[in-house]
Figure 1 (cartoon, one colour):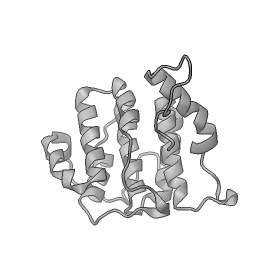
Figure 2: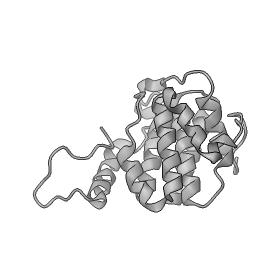
Figure 3: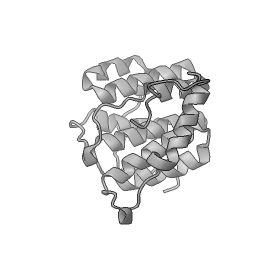
Amino acid sequence: MLFSAPSRKTPGAHSSPNVWVSGVRERAGREARPATPEGGCAPPKLPHRLNNLTLVLLLQDKLTDADAINHEAWSLTRSRSDITTARILFMRLVLCVRQSVSPAPYLGQLNTLLTGPALTAKGNVATQWDIAKPLEFLGEKLTSDHLDLLTALVAALNDRANLPALDAFSEWRNQPPVPLATPWPRE
């Protein structure tokens, strides 16, 4: 699994976030870089891989690059109601918080997806998103309120039974759904 910590320690290895992030950096060249359609990548999987790359870049504090890759992933999925589209919006929320930009329109689009029909898994993408460890490391750069909201969003993405817990957050409660077709700034 791309974002899981190593199962065994090597001599001198530490379990600190820096060591874990270094492992992600090392694997990014092999696993997270998106294959092009000419390279045999099925189109439904490309946005998923771009979203993984967005996360890797966020972990490396490369916000400008992460923003560009996230926009590219969105351009491929903006009209789809699937798990990958929801995860791309989630990563947009993280980027907004890190860049001190209002996440309102993206939270509204995520609201549209989470309160609509069940999300499908295109490209054989896993239905459960194991992002707890990366979110923990990203959380070092977020306020506790932001981290709590993001954690609740992941729980709702993984299981709609957790959707009512989002009502505890005023940002969610006060954000009306926004159509997926609504353009992002810079589009």
